[in-house]
Length: 284
Image (cartoon, rainbow, N blue to C red):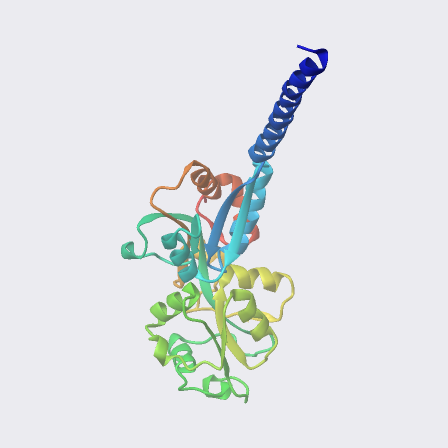
């Protein structure tokens, strides 16, 4: 065999080796990228719970740099539906949960209340339960009918599917069709901004959200209920009646990373975050 022929035969072997080495380098590089790809926990639901979970998620990410916590709002009904359908790993629900609503587990991470809010300049300092029912059912249409100024009431109500609405209706023994609302809002911040921007408005929101915004100077105030101020302290000592748990839910038993996050959210490590959000820690 000629040298020319031998050379022709050895060239493909060398090229094959080079090709193999290149492929291995690419494979190793891809494996490295894949192993460093962040793990993602998707959490959807209650707008009341979302700011708290988002802050807890940030702290969890600091401790676990390869994890990303994706928090999305849309109401407690969305949280339940997304977990049922497998779209979300965790749902956020800001009320008690009936056993038939979810085939899975429920984890309370804090307590909150629902509070009546008016504009800060509204001279009324308190309303009775009967007056609140009369206002939201349309029997009263002017503030002077309940001892206030002469001005047409603007009733701000929560949209269907919001847990704050469910808690409000249950406490005041009202049916959804009885409410005569002028404005329908979604999350707490929408309700707070609406009432802060209208001296004649009245609505109800998360006590924690309202206390937080009042602390920032937002022009709203919380009204006492049955003579008891809606505050974190009174929710903690159970003297304020319109209270509720803030829950995380999962479908069946959560996998290890999700369970680790939930256990972190229930731990004393996040107690300061819960209090910063003006909620009541279950670790108290």
